[in-house]
Image 1 (tube, rainbow, N blue to C red):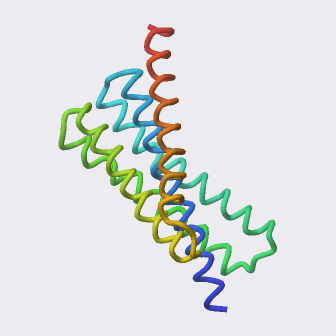
Image 2 (cartoon, rainbow, N blue to C red; image 1 turned 90 degrees about the vertical axis):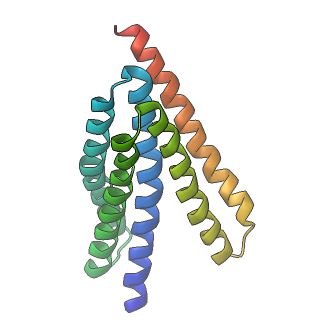
Length: 161
């Protein structure tokens, strides 16, 4: 029974970490490219930390319910998802508050890459897979999101000004 709760917490943590990094970086980069406004980026990060953490944890809750999990396991994964997503998103505020926006965006991309790389590496080792393939795959996904949201932000800046 205890192992099931730990598995649920691990699932929520994994989902929250990946979603927290990729969603927050995507939003931050898009807002930066579209507005160049530190205030907009700060507001976006705080909004993601709250609204998307609740949304993702509710999604995890429903996913676990549909899989027939027990109530205790469902709530454990939901709580882990919320706390991880919220915490990861909020961490990205620190560079934005300390540095000029351009430098903060670069620092946060580096921070996000490190978080994804370390976590991907650890998961791959646990699964007895090639850790560098897992790291490359997850960093490539994050890079694609960052590139697309940057381009969309630039397009928005041109199309709606």
